[in-house]
Image (cartoon, rainbow, N blue to C red; front, side):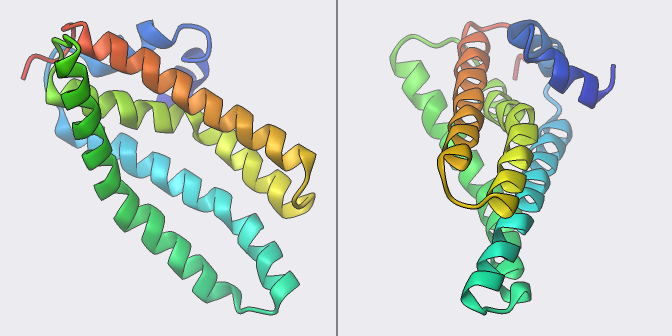
Length: 164
């Protein structure tokens, strides 16, 4: 099944889609690809917002986009690996049975599943600007990410899926 269909399906059956995507083998290449696609989508979501900032403040757009690109394509993947490791250690303390890989993939998949909502947030921020609409869409996007991450992490730490 395609990734796009799985992202859509994850809103109806998050645990089943996550466990199927996790699989039985460790595929770090797949996990990194999921993380990078999610980071690219969130970076793209920044463009309308940064265009608005550029117009309102008179700053050049290219440096703003360059900074966002550096943050989302270089810093955020490294931070995501660190956050996933910390969440796995916390889960181990409270009795988690999962693997390092499953914990990483739980975070990466949640970020990818929430990325369409971040794209919507970027459009709302760019076209409508700061306000209630931006706050509501941002809160929904953040909630979707956190809910999927929690569901995925609980499933990952149950000890099912990838074994290494």
